[in-house]
Image 1 (cartoon, rainbow, N blue to C red):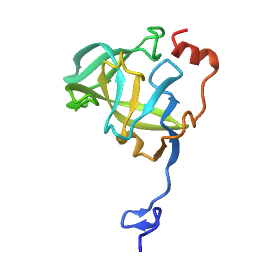
Image 2: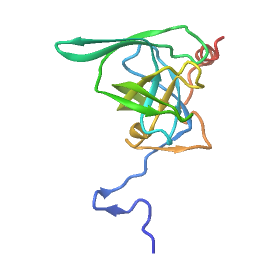
Image 3: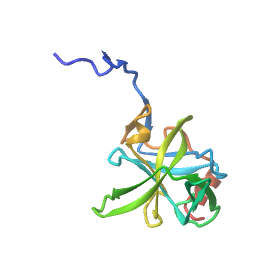
Image 4: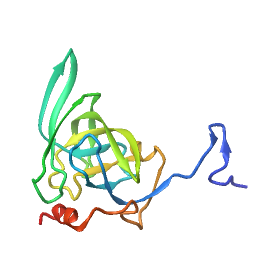
Length: 167
């Protein structure tokens, strides 16, 4: 007989996670832009954000990176400049089968009202449908994804959504 999905195990009781849709409006508390639309991708291990003007440097002997992001999918408006420690550099295989070396930085994501810190790879996602992809490493911090739903956490006002459409 199979055990119930939320039974007690050697790790202790497993509580069901917060249910999110396959796409959500999230916040990045470190970024001066209030909203960014993200795709929640259980097929991707790491999270990725569209980054450009990437400049590596060191501070007190520690590797850091400065980069800019465009929060809106079809617009260059409201670009934000960030600086973060580099915690890794790894080879990432994309969905089209190609591989590229990416810098990895820690980033806080506010999803469904909860802040989670995840490893974010910096990538050119300019041609992708979403400027932010949230992968399994972030989702494993207490989220389930219902692929039949969208925007479970709510949406910003229409004027903000129109910016994302490039209008």
